[in-house]
Length: 420
Image (cartoon, rainbow, N blue to C red; front, top):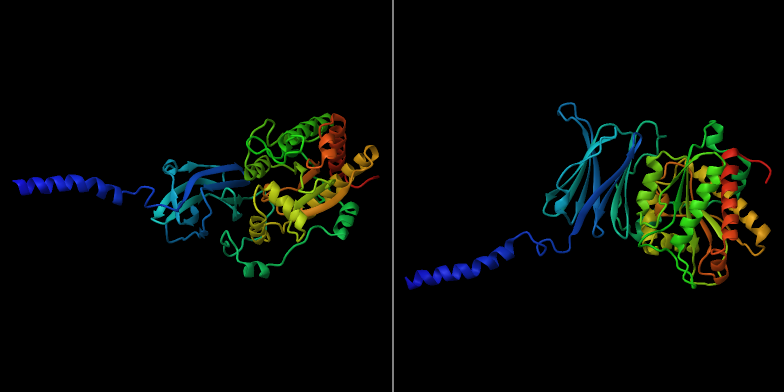
């Protein structure tokens, strides 16, 4: 009896330890990326799906072709994420039903892989690419009604590209002087086709928990961009022109990929993101306007890294992926739009503020412009890090002149070339 009692006591002592050792808790999934959420934005011609993760992970994607011998109701696109585990809240299917995608589902495919499956109703093209800090995987799907985009690459590169691989990709520069000259002389695709600019999306940079750059006097970029964006909305509304949509009109945080998705969801004709510049050099000053592009210019990379809230290394990783994404017809129109806004903004400010400096039209890889389906620009209005320009950014008269310049540039782009 004593022997049996000792065995039972030993089992009672050991069982809890065995349960801890073999239960599927965090210790067995240590170091894995957690797939925490799947979000989507859509219209009948476009859907953006964003997969949110707790850390960077390697992933692959595959589109299953329709097989007549297999009775499948829908085609499927799936993304396999290695070294990942699924958050418990994501075990239910996410209905989309927008005419392009039926549903999104996420599941633990095996112990080391999370698979996200998109059931497809009707698509013409798709792209899959990562964004970083925090890491997320973006899936852009387009359908009939949207101009065909360049075909996707045969495979998605890992989130971190090697130095050697990056060297093999032809690098694209910012807009040349000849491009800017042609932009001033030519007419836009919109004008050639006799189309109307019906909707403009204005994007006030930063917001909420993301203050953006902060001046020496305490002025926050997020407050100035919101003020300028509201003034621009009011100015354009007075012209009884296009419908104006704001990505935010309060002090809230909106992820960069969501801002792009808002513009695409509303099928906007133009997208303008408003920011305030900053530099470690307090003497840096001026106005500059950006389009989505690749550049060897270190200053442009620094600005992109700051606005992306990421590192210059991550910008280099993004460049590797962007080569396929930026070669679209809208690039030329974006250059024309950027040129019109930059020239009118600088000219108007110089008439009242003689020390205004033009830093030109540049190209850089900004997350907020990735995937936009319309001519898109990002305007850096003055340097909040420059004490003199920080004071100007608190002056209502200066802000009105900035808005007058931007709105005049937009109207010049919309209406075509005319007297400067």
